[in-house]
Length: 241
Image (cartoon, rainbow, N blue to C red; front, side, top):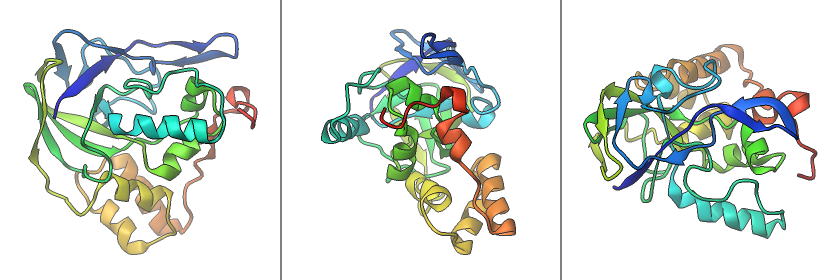
């Protein structure tokens, strides 16, 4: 499957509407080969090291298949045009392509990407910066509920990646745990001990996601996602947006 590569640097998102809000979500297509290290693609950056980046979140894949759906969602609700166009890289992804979505991709999948070897580690957890990016106050919640979140990957073997390289599936050790099912277990369904145990026991799932599953199992209460999804008060958009 052919993929596109995207990289970007940290910058203030919207100085007039959200002064001080910094992100590296604004990516541009790479037209030349890049070194893919354990930290991600050469020339790419994560501004919030606490919630982005690191060994288990080195790369972000977002299916290009979803962009027509977002355009339909916007027009069906009569929303104004988004601040960012519905096209690959809009959601801040490093990798995008057609033909692989959350319903097919599985936790632990290993892919050859040029000379690099990468593995799916967790679904993406949408955050409030997406609301600022597009200008819609609850886009992050829509993404989470719809399951169109994309996923994050760790790098198992470093190597050079060329924009013309293909993403090739090498191994699928956990076919029962798709990215969509993983996200639904934590985000979109009632507490189910068997499903949470499935997450907790999967060695390929990132420690952060396994910790969330363990917390829900132990305490019987799901985590509060509101701050991640909506952000602090000073960065929240009006409800009509």
